[in-house]
Image (cartoon, rainbow, N blue to C red; front, side, top):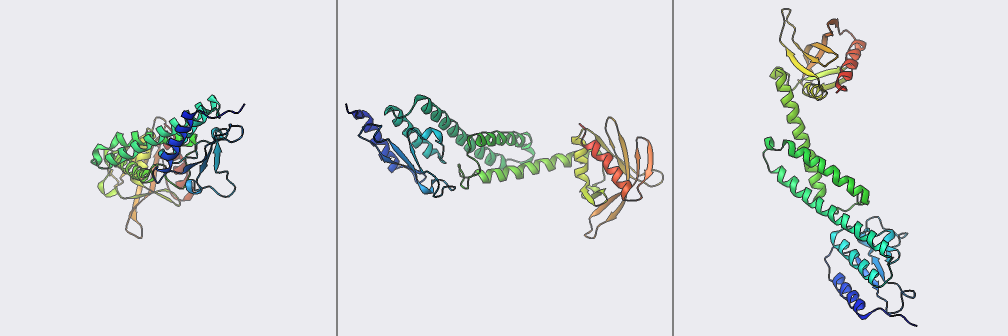
Length: 305
């Protein structure tokens, strides 16, 4: 006995073909055939157009049938394509050419990816809104968006939709770049605030500190790292012998540093440790080895929370 598709299914298929043919310019799918013969003789076939994926080449199988779609259903890179995949799967299940479990797998993946694109769009909107606010008001909102971006990236990686040349949601890369700038600006404000609380001289704000024999770091950054590690930092005004410096103190270690003040060739203020006191024991910094030993002590403190 010859089995034919019910007339209602053929009408549904025809309607979706028309919809796909008139879809937006982002559509990257088309039906190749809608059979009127038994499924065993001619399966419903969907073609992914050659330009739909930037990583397609001649070795890729660009077509899917109802029985193969579930193996790799999310070659779709736009919300419009996801809608088309969903419609194709619905025709397949009605035509009894797709297993219900495979259809459910596709439905869930399409749902997750659609939700992911919506989250990306919302992320873009939030970054744009945050960027228009005054810097002083951004604070915790920046960190919240950093956390949200990490969640989106994790979901994108799980679904395999990252690493393509084209953006899934236009404006995403620009929003990510803007967030990095906002995050850096916010971090700088935190560090500047930490520096201000130490009572350090304003003249030292732009100074470079010789952390190791051939390694310089900004004094503001050193203070910030120390505070982030749980240590306290305080300026030491000039004493009776004319030395000024600062103290970094953690639960286990207390380091007083008295630098020699000089300038680099470009005029930048340079602080070179000259005399230090570690837990009450003082010694002079006289060579590369001694400044390296001091750097080791500071690194241990900066890594302790």
